[in-house]
Image 1 (tube, rainbow, N blue to C red):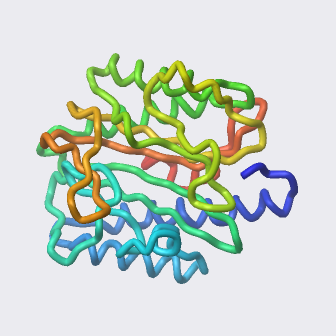
Image 2: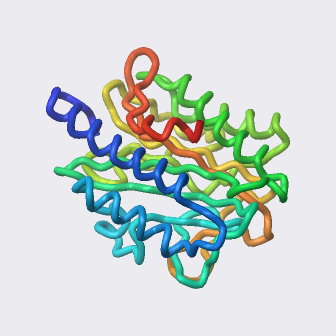
Length: 254
């Protein structure tokens, strides 16, 4: 989406605030002993109260209001009555929604309760790298250069990146051009970020795996080798200077 009017700006700001608020409240609501279905229902209630519609449910018929992935699950985890959250779990919540024809996407990983399995560093690294990447995005910057920054920062922290899950354009639908904003350097990608466009930038930072595998349920991506991934994502509006983080209501979990 390219923002060309004040009406469009207000529209994308409103849905982005709803998505960010829903994600923040879901994270605060999560507790050991709760099922992911209960947590998802809580998120669905917030979206409904705010007038928004679940984007994965609306677009793909996803069996949940939000995506909730636990431990070695990377993304698109299906909320379930059989998945019970436990102390120290690595949890990822991805909230995307639509309101009045505008769409936004926001995600974040966190450790539930006490960090008994020592995964907080992975989470903080993913968050920090996303912050760093966003700070460098402006009109005219090569998408490949942001991928190189993410990959370089991950290697410096002794982590890896997932190479087949990517960020994307967003705004008038859930996935738009640019269709791929990867977490690694792709020299063949000559596309540049465009001023006034809206994109969802993501970091998938991994302890070991470099590719996501489909679990077999038609939705969930897992590492396949039991390693762990922390993802963070914001919807942003690109400018000539610092981009505007439209989903900043979740404050990147800070």
